[in-house]
Length: 251
Ligand code: PEP
Image (cartoon, rainbow, N blue to C red):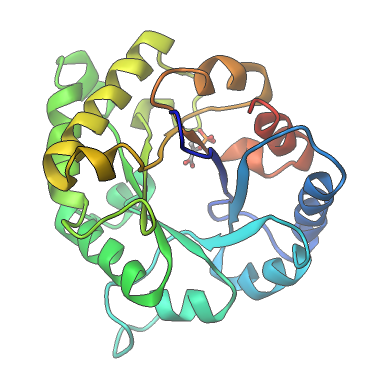
């Protein structure tokens, strides 16, 4: 989108111990050694790795993020991690509402919205994930689902400085399947229009809308070249530096 610097964001999910930091160092080095890209780069890692990950990319343009946060700042929530804690550990961003969180932990739009607000409160950029299931697509409900998710998951206070949207068709995550370029274009234009209704056209025109779902170096140029696609959220292919850098080079 004209005027928007793209963002390529990795999501390591529940993968990686200290040994995986070598890949992160390679990603950082890639961005330091003249990688031909204009994109901003971010890798979201398990909370256990956050502070070490931040050290691993220190001095490079690569940023580090969390994969989820609790909506509250602190309190009696054993095992949970707040946005403030992520920030303290070196994160600049946090993913909220990933489909795996929505499925594994029953997170609904209201929960996701509260988490996005928590991220803002802590000074983190929220990457708010939305996307239809296979069944919803087959029923022709994709655009209605996206409308509902934008209405329910995106805070009214969201801005380009505090929020990023990620369109991730659930059936394309980790499956090797991807929508057609025309389907991606339609979904992203629809999300932008719904954001404009909510936040006004000017702000909506500045917010990044990432595509996520089986992005790899071989399909990145096509998928990321679609109108209104302002970057990628990359799962599996972000675990290998060569793949992540290859995707970033699509820009
Ligand atoms: C994701 O986890 O957000 C994702 C898009 O995964 P993958 O790239 O592996 O499909």
